[in-house]
Length: 327
View 1 (cartoon, rainbow, N blue to C red):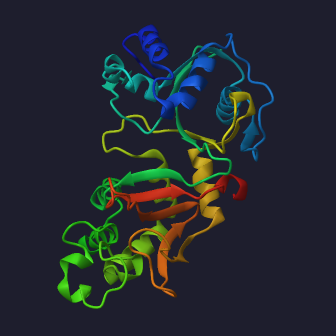
View 2: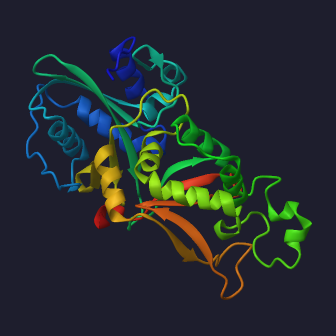
View 3: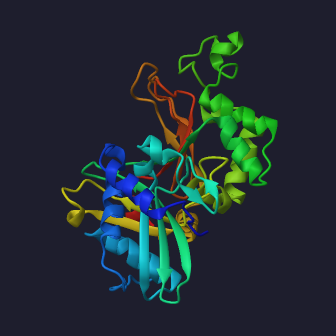
């Protein structure tokens, strides 16, 4: 999908003026700045092999080389890099970006690259960016929304979800009306968290349906989580760039790179659907000794109730910590 902005130079000016204003976007902002400053034409060098995914230093160069190797491009006569986060920091930029005539107000791609190759063919690529700024890799949020919104996303992708299945997720998340707190009989003698049901406690038919879905439709659901976040998202990512841990500079940064197709397959090969035991050992509703719960997992994806104060009932999917070293 080609990027067709109203005025490309205007976008770059907006981006330049907003870079660094929001710490959360600083990583993507600096990468796009460096890409735009590269001399043209750009000829990829040291193209990574088919099995290479983790690289150190100069993420902008590794990103370009990786995309060129996957797309079979030997020379780029022009490159325009836009950080959607940088544009979003400006009131002027928020309603500016257009893709094929569609205004982009929010999208899953954090970086949008528009290339022109040596044959004057133009194409655009979306890149989803994840980053860890801890000494060791941590879980990375992949998708966070309500149980209802997740079910709607599946239905929109022609993956049927019954009312029972939706009910099981709403029980897991603790939506009002679906909590143990809302059922006096369920509360009698309860010694574990009353604000939501755990996976093994949710509607049996709905739970079994989702377990079948996660097992049978693992690739499709993983792809949706990687590429979709908003029902009106017009620009889904083709690649994922993941900063693996804290670094003092971009030259010392380690990154993992995947096309979405590669990551979906690697995730499936790593593991199918399974349940992991855990106990709640912190917070105001700690489990008594010996109490265990079950957490759904498929591939490198982990599913859980968010549970924080601001968005306690949100459904969250994470990428397993350090997955890039394991798959």
